[in-house]
Amino acid sequence: MKFSDSVTIQGKHATLVPLTIAQHDGLCEAVRDGELWKLWYTSIPSPEAMLKEIDRRLGLQRLGLMNPFCILDAKGNSIGMTTYMNIDQENRRLEIGSTWYRQSVQRTAINTECKLMLLRYAFMKLDCIAVEFRTHFFNHQSRKGIERLGAKLDGVLRSHQINRHPDANDSLRDTYVYSILASEFPAVEAHLSLGLQMPKM
Image (cartoon, rainbow, N blue to C red; front, side, top):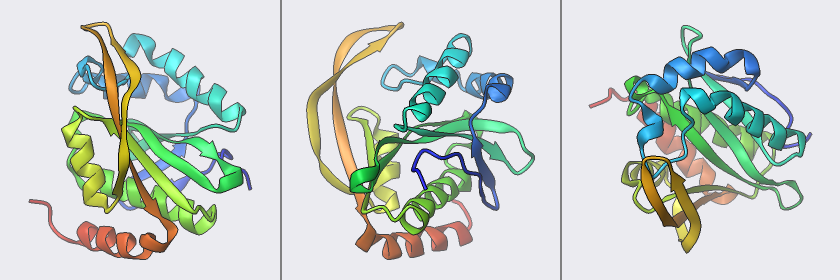
């Protein structure tokens, strides 16, 4: 099994389905909820750039470097995107990233469930040794979310990338790198599973 092989992962609150061009219009509608592309510290596509971003992700999948998903809610509506990326199948490692959700579903059970589904598939089906998460220093919401998953901070890649955004001057991105190891996953899984059973505050 290749880490980049398309797969559908079903959950209670959301479903992860293989990304396709057919989801373009739904994803454009989703990204307009909160005008997410205007956040300067993220790389979320605008509606005008959505087709190009879908093509980019599918191109990386053909190279075996990414496995892109469209996130559907319980009614089958497109609500965001996520990926297995920076795939290193030889060393059984990958990163969960390039993720965004429409604003109206942020801070709900959907994000927790999607991360749990991706982690379960990575560790239990793909037999990963480790799963990484990376985020911008200034993306405090993302950092807190990753830490709540139970991921540990591996380190900071200082001046890692040039952050280019049409509404802000180019800046250097410090990237925070986190990971969860296979040996840590049972505790992480129990923690996330319990969280999904508890009412949201």
